[in-house]
Length: 91
Image (cartoon, rainbow, N blue to C red; front, side):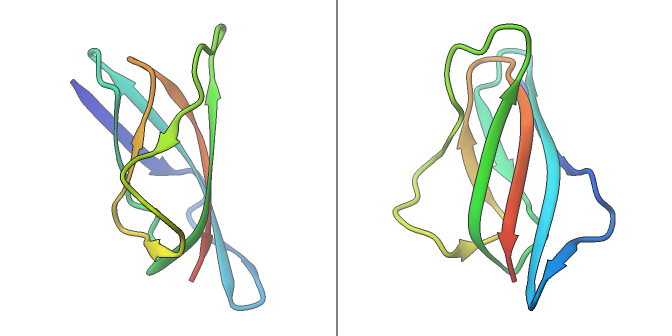
């Protein structure tokens, strides 16, 4: 059971003093999620987009009550063996 999340852009995009990180995540071996390290000190928004031929459930951020939060370990829950993209916004 493995989960991985990696940034697609090596250099973060910027809007003012905020950064935007674009990346991809994947679960395999029956995994249903894991932690995304956005590379941000503070993540203010996280958008999760599943990809595939048949999406049955939207991935969600797990065990968090509100943003902003520490951007180094944001746990998400996915369908087993799900894949997708993420966009993280923050500082």
